[in-house]
Picture (cartoon, rainbow, N blue to C red):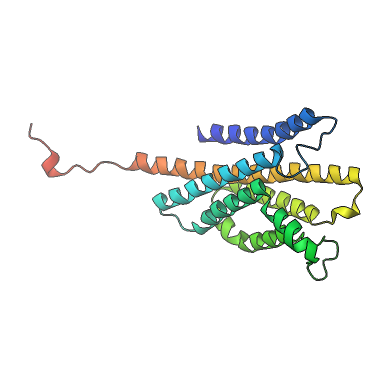
Length: 229
């Protein structure tokens, strides 16, 4: 049953990654980028929902690790907090507001990183923090190789999106920027779905183990509970 649930979950996530951008593309064609490439549009809303669900599932996983008395719980707690924080940023465009309202007007840059536009380095710093904490997270996922693989896929996609997002948009043509931003958002959605799949698979594995432990627990019958014939 668990194997079937895992397969259906992976199929659903893959189908979602294909269908959501395609529907948003078709809904606004020929201005296909409007609901995908811009901020605070249906694409960013769906991304934020995906991250919130991933955060909740990671939180449930952290709780179940306590029931199983497993080690390495901190990684799931970090994922729960991190996903919810990213969802908040995605929904309300927090780092974009900081960039456009405070950092860019003051020409704040990172030294040596000349390809990054003023103020456009906040997500890059968040990505660095995430990579530093990645070993802690991997320790919480390593019991499930499929969950670990999906987590790695999510990290790779996130690194690509953060890297392309840091490139100064003024170096692109208008059409080029639309294509670049659209592909970036699609990859960002893929990263969120991969993260959701990773924590969901880990949770499914732990629930299966919890059920197996419960089935093997036999009730203890004391002498007082044995009634005379």
